[in-house]
Each structure stands twice: as structure tokens, then as C-alpha cells.
Length: 583
Image 1 (cartoon, rainbow, N blue to C red):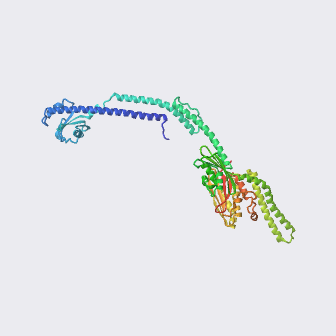
Image 2 (cartoon, rainbow, N blue to C red):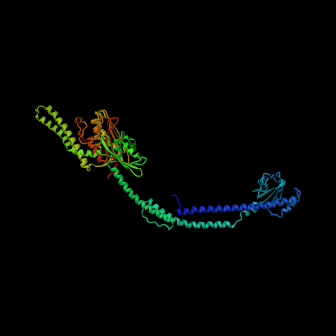
Image 3 (tube, one colour):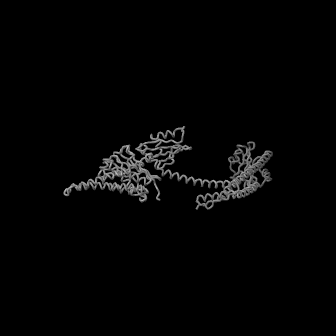
């Protein structure tokens, strides 16, 4: 576990470091100034000594080395540690009171001599190469005759003088101590508010509402901290209410029979429900997965023109679009922030329901009358035949049998529809993996595929799962395939694929490459007992209820299905199953 100091300790540490650095800086600066002043003072003293020795040498008209004894006597009156060196212009040592000048090397390249050559005087603190003692040297050039160099031992004379203590350092240290104590006081006071805020934040992170009341100090920081907590509590309450309203709105959008989409001012999608993309694909000329495609489709020119208008008399506009045998009401609402909503409503649905109710009884009676009449006629014919006419009897018995099968299938389909509408709760719902179900369906219909030279292409991932009735899901896709086999023609291709899966819904596309259906009939193909080609349907034995069962079974799963002709030829079905959680 990583060690971490508390906020209070970190404040104390940080400010202690800052104050310590500041104090050390002041002390170092002050000491440096004192060192410079005292060094300058020593250099002035050494310069005075050099001038004194020069005047003495000049007055006595000294010659070297003849008169060095008098110079030794004079130096004796100065400090015992004072070193005097007379150096010629060529760098040769003419005199040194401590060393044998004859044994000393040329001094022209010594730092202090070099400075004196250029500036007339120079100083330096260094180790003597002659006797290996550290000196403060001062050299001065006189009348282009020679240099006089005066030096004091650094460790003995100069360093103690330069490093002598003073009262200012004690004052600075006292200042540091006082600042540290004040910092302790204010850090304790300030960190109390921070500690309360930290505890408040930890409670939020851990979702622990145990402590809701916090006591902050009576100061500016405490007042700000209290306001933060109060504003958070208000924000939390408002966010909770907003989330509840948002959830209600999204549920309304999701289960609405209208296609609803919300776009930004830049016409980027913010939200769409599953119906919107489904309706959009019915209206546009070619399939799309992009909701923004509607802004470039000619069917929505009026909507785009309204959005582009700068002088709109109203923020609401609606129009009707007729496509693929269906009519849609498209409505747009522009909000104050320039975002807008688009609604697509299938207004043919109500009319279809009304017609369905009117025709239901007549259609059932009509469809049942045909096989019953045929069976009755065949039986009457059999009764009128001679007993020995076995061949003709068998022929009419076979025909009657075919009609009974048709009647049985018709009753079964009617029963399926009635059960979906009137007793939907009798269908068991469970998570159904579509791929195994469709593989089973392909196997069941393999003989029909071979008989009609039909290619079946299946593209559904193993991960696709729909919560619903396995029986109805099987019935949906079987009826679609049998519809294509019966009416699309021979030597065709049937394709079923899951072209998109989101967190909200699963989207399927089913199509064949057959003859398709005229646009005027597309709106009716899901109606009960409706047949595009009545005579052909009688020949194939269809009941006219297959696609109606498909439609109602899809609605049972809260889904949606639409049909349209493919530009390449054939009939296309777009199916949407919303992802509903198990109850």
C-alpha cells in the first residue's frame, strides 16, 4: 500500500520547505555580502601594506638582493603570518620573506599577477605552489618596475575573519521559527475544512450516506465548503428527478409505435428508437444504417427545406410520404437550442385494422367454404358411383383427402392467429438462440429447396439471442421461406441475415431474388387471406394466412416488419426485434 501524507502534514511540509529555502537564501545572500565586504576590506588592508612597502623601498633606494635584510626587519613589525613577495616584470622572484627566492619558479602566470598585468592590481585565493599553504594573495604593479605581492594564510587569518558570526543570522533563524509556528496554527485551522470535505467526498465515492451533516469552521473556507455540500445535495436531488423523467421518456420512445429521432443543430444523431431506422429504410431508395442519411434523400426535401429556413413562422412542420404501399406522416419539431426531433408515423396501420375487422368474418367463411364444398362434392360423387368403379372412387377419395389437409392447415393457421391475439400468454417466453433454430429450419426445408433448385444463404451469428417464443420465432422464418418458395419462382436465392445488433434491438433482412410484388399490393400482403394471385395460390395450396401470422408473431415480440421490393428484383422484408429483458 502506497504511503501518503495527510493534507495537513503536506501543507506543513510544503510551507516548511518553502520557508526553509527562503530563510537559507537570505542567510546565504547576507553571508555572501559580508564575505565580499570583508574580503574587500582585507584587500584594502593588503593594498595599504603593499603601498607602504613600495614607498619604503623607493625611499631607501633598495637594490635586490643587497638590502633584503632591512626589509626583513621592517616586516617583523607586521603580522607574523604576513607574506611579502617582490616580483620583477619578467615574473622572476626578487624577494620573499618566507621562502628562498632563488629556489622559486617564475610567477608571471600566477592568477593575481596576471590580473595586475591587465588591471594594475589583482587578488586571488589559492594554494601556494611553493609552500602548499592556502593564501589570500594581493598583487599590485608599481611604475612598470616590479610587482609587490602581499598574502595572508587563508585558513589562519582570512577564513575566520570572513566566517565570523553576526546577529543577523540569529534574527533570521528566529524569524523562521516564528513563521513555522504560525504555519502550524493556520494549517490546522485550514485543514479542518479540507478534512470535512475529504470525508464528504469519500462518503460519496463509497456511496455511504451514513454521515450527511458536516461541521465546518466559521471562516471563509468553511463557508465555501458548506455551500459546496449544500449545492451537491440539491444537485443530487435534481439529478435523481431528472433521471426518473429521462427513464420515463426513453421508455415512451422505445415502446412508441412512431419512429422518433433527436438530432443536434449540426444534424448529428443524439437518440433514435428502433422504429425510426425501420421506417427510414422503407422510405429511402436503398437500405442504410445511418439515420443522418435522410437529410440527403429526396423523399425528405420538404423537411430539409424547413430546417434550412431562417424565417420559420412556426417551429413545427409535418408532411406525408407514400412509399412501398404505405403512408407515413413525418413531423419535425425545432427546439429553442436549435436541436430538433423528427417523428415518422405509419398512418396506414389504423386503416388496415379497420378493414381487417370488417373482412375477417367474410374471409374466414369464404376460405372455409371452398374446401368444405369440395369435400362434400367429392363424397357425393363417390356415393353415386358403382361399387365396382374402384379406380374413380380412389381418385375422388384422394382429392377429398387433399382438401381435408388444406382445411386442417387453414384451421391450424386460424387457430395460431387467434392464439397470438387472444391468448398470447400461453406462449412460453425464453431466451432463444437464433442460429440453432434457423439451422433446424434449413434442415426441415432442405427437400423443398432441392425440388425447386433454391439456394438458401444464412448469415446469423451464434451470439444472437432473442427473448421470446421459440414456436413463434420458428413460425416467422418458416412462413417467410415457404412464401418465397410458393410465390417467388424456381431457381432463386433466398437470403436471411442479421445486419445489425445494438443494445436496444436486433435487425434482420430477409429477401429473395424472385419476381417480387407490385407496389400497389405491398400494403396488403400482411392482411389475412389476401392473395396477389388468387388462382395461383389455389394451385399451390396456400391459405393466405402465412404473412399475417408472421406479422402478428413479430408484433407479439414487440417488433416490427415491413416489406418492399428490391431494386435488383425480388421481395425484401426488414424485421426488428427489440431486446426485452426477461420478466
